Image (cartoon, rainbow, N blue to C red; front, side, top):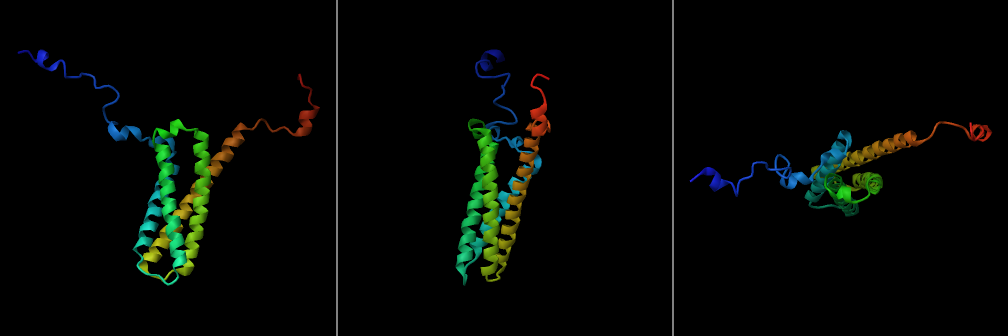
Length: 183
């Protein structure tokens, strides 16, 4: 028997673009949609909010539990929202929705999450029982809230730079009114 007759119907010489180093689930994740510093910030937001939530869950008893429960809700929500935004940026879903809406949602979610997380961390500081798990949760909470707010400041700066590029030449209203239209 010849080798060609046995293997030709089932063997592919050119595997095509669907196979190779980025196949399977890895083919659906694109990390290059976010610039490097923002990618790192998104990863830190995710990690720190998860660590804050885990450390808060380790707390077994509390005397003033309102701050703990609020911190629990906010840290879990921050983790889930940052995971959602990261999934949207890194999957083909980003291409199916309007990119300006994704960026706008990210802008306002990041601002809101950072402010509420900072508030929850401040409230938890004033009501905690000084256990090591609570202190670790507070530290991770403050760090996560600062990462959210830093990401917001970077997005705000990028928006300002983008709007400066879109503006026409700096002409005052008086100059525009005195110049002839056909000049």
